[in-house]
Length: 521
Image (cartoon, rainbow, N blue to C red):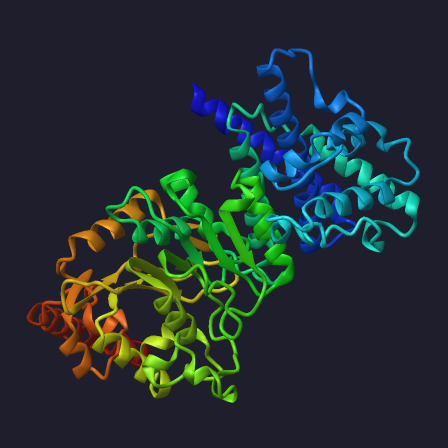
């Protein structure tokens, strides 16, 4: 019963988001509209989060009728410092989502009101430990944009609609899994946008099921990890899978990631808050991971997961400093300038803890191409860092039909071999895309943990045999494909052909007789 109620609530939530999308879509294109919905959801979330936190403290102290939303800004100022220390930010009662919403229809300067509040929230963290996590968070929520309307009045109409729609969303009380609801709304919006627009918004979206598989590959046999890291973290969905699978308290020292795209970086930080990850438990940076890595002080990491951009360009050998960078120098060569894929792999390996596991989605070309990529594969195999290669089904990702692979890296392997798994059939078809089901994920994980040869599916190959194959790491090189063609009995077939030829001759003779008779007439 509880489960069906949850499904019902989820359904309602998705419907509400869909309605907002339809309301706004006429004036704001898909990618931008997403920023507004997420920005306002975040604004509502932190308003309720701080209100509930303060109220709970007062109620506990015996002040049962207290409501932070009802007190004056002057009274609230007293707790500013304490709140910034605890929550990482501060908001005055007049700035709370619910109070702004009440006044919105009669506020001719609503856009300015909201802009000041967003600046004030970010400003409250300035000069404190949480500054980096709040700085520029509302950067993409431009309340003065022409996209919302040509005049201030028209823009404000849209902003009132947004406040009302987001305010009406049934996100439950905080004790009833509110965080799930916020997080779920976020994921639905991201998924809805990704499936409609592929990767055109600059967001390579990793489907939830693939995130689940990657995460579970890195935590086999573990109930907790020290730190998790994603060098190309996008909106953070891969990192947050650890919170879902292990429980956020079991990622002891937190969530770390780096993202080059500013908009996506902002989304990632918002996503952390929406999933109730406290400001001191995550560190997301906005820079180019390959040339300006931001987490030297935090590595190594026990779990690394990533779906880095495929075949992206990078400086490579144009930057003379990179060949001496400790992340890349051991291989003696840099990834090619037109394909940075191997650079992401070397970076991840370098920052992986001795007892850690990295699972990275890879473009298949890096497994068989020659040149620098072959030399890097040689380094990885000769040093026994590759644990497993998994061939995934095609059409699994939004925006690309390519059948990608997962590379699993370990620094402390107990055997000198690589497990190759052909999971190209482990999926179900949903419209034009393929999808991994729970059963598919379980099957892949079972093959991964059992590490045994399974005909047409899995093969454990000694590193020496891979070296003989020019360090080719394509699954198809080692796992034989099952011949599903129909077996043909040649003798039987020849007999049938002979019968057909004889029959053909008989028919010809019959036709000749008929023609002769006609001509005789």
